[in-house]
Image (cartoon, rainbow, N blue to C red; front, top):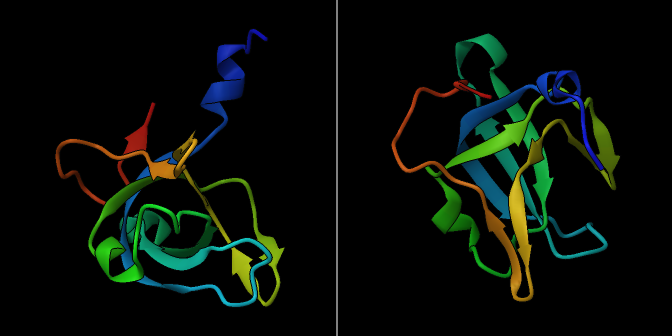
Length: 110
């Protein structure tokens, strides 16, 4: 399927740093609760991420990730997920998208 550029441009994809991560006990599929700092313009957003195959919560703290920040909130059990952390599905699990140089939190992708 071919997507018009305006569809892509409507996504607000930003870089943020994970400040807190914990096991999401109430999730149906194994997941972590993440608190991600997207800088002064956006602030901190929460996300539920099914990334338990490759990562432990303490390994995620301080890691910069790429996320869509304008999908709106999604209620997952007792947790409000406010952004979608991007990753790649592999046979072994989900690998996070990352950047190879540290950038300012809130930096826009695109």
